[in-house]
Image 1 (spheres, rainbow, N blue to C red):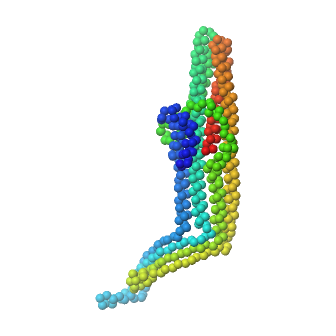
Image 2 (tube, helix red, strand yellow):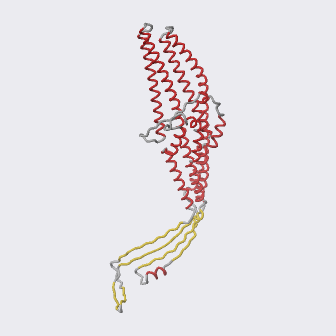
Image 3 (spheres, helix red, strand yellow):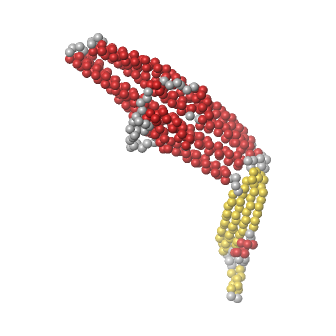
Amino acid sequence: MNKTRVLVCSIVCFFAIKGASAQPKEAWSLKDCLDYAMANNLSIKKSANQIAISQENLKQSKAALLPSLSASTSQSFGYRPWMSGNTSTVNNGQVTTGVKKEYYNGSYGVSGNWTVWNGNKNRNTVKLNKLYEQEAQLDSAVNAKSIQEQIMQLYVQLLYLKEAIEVNRSSMENSKANEERGKVMLEVGKLSKVDVAQLSAQTAQDQYNLVEAQTNFEKYRLQLKQILELPDTMHFEVQVPMTEDNEALQTLPVLQDIYSAALSMRPEIKKAETGISEQELNVKIAKAGYYPTLSMSAGVSTNTSSRVEEAWKSQMKTNFDMMASLNVSIPIYDQRQAKTATNKAKYEWINSQLDLEQSKKDLYNTIENYWLDAASNQQLFKSSIANVNSKQESYDLLEQQFQLGLKNIIELTTGKVSLLQAQQSKLQSKYLTILNIEMLQFYAQ
């Protein structure tokens, strides 16, 4: 868990520093979200329980190397209704004769057993359970990284939508201003009612776009809240620092460098490598079925009975017994169980090697996709900067010409739509570039 926290801190350093002064204290920064998720997400808590279970299994397998010791006692009461033998007792010089049909028996014992050697199956089981513990820890790390990745994607999406809201709000305010100018021009006879209606329709469309962007922002914020396992009644605000264009224009890391770093650090690769070691031990454990088993046992016991005239204490001493034995079990024909188990374990070992290769391939494909997306969106962003500037200048000129009566309402509306599309394209390419660069850095750490 400490390693995970260090990793989280390094990943979010960029956003944490930017968000420190941008929003009020009650808003959650990306670092706040990630730290809270690591401590409270239910999936991560379940992963922690799996680690604890694997640790218990390891302790049990270690204890199995030691001898076992147990104590036992048995007390029984019997009745023989048709017993005809007489029993004579002397009491104060008088002899009493009777038939004793009830009797009581007791036995007491302590025994121990120890498997001395079973083809090293027990010792290899300890080693295997150590690997299972490591695998559980790696599973937890894989799960944590998956949740961190989801949170980062949602957070960057919120950054994009926050800026998209401002773009749509600015566009709506501009449309409202044009609508008001149109109404004034209608009064002086420079525009028709149809033209003013088109201006009103553009304002309504911009209002719809603004509401849609705000709704999407709330949806993504709700998704983030759900991943954090926050109570439904808890007020949750996201700290959204503004980003600069140069953050999407930074030099991309080298693809092969990212992959090499990820190969040595990603938990899914380490898990696949651990799986190979596990299957190697399973092969050894299966082969133990070919070997003899040597075990030792020892014990002490005694018993008493009311049918014997001897006193209970004397019986305990007289019947006291000690025993020790050395047992050897040699497999001769086990209905092919050992051979089948060994062959199956070998096939699983081959599968584990294939799993490792598949994990490496999947990792490379994931990193390559992030890199290609970052590169393509960065190029789109570079071209969109010039495109937005051009569209903005064109629209500003259209507005001036419209006010002078040199351009009609259709040309103005077309220019407005073209500008808004260029602005949205710029925002999308900008934040997709930032997201994919952050994901590349995430996989490299």
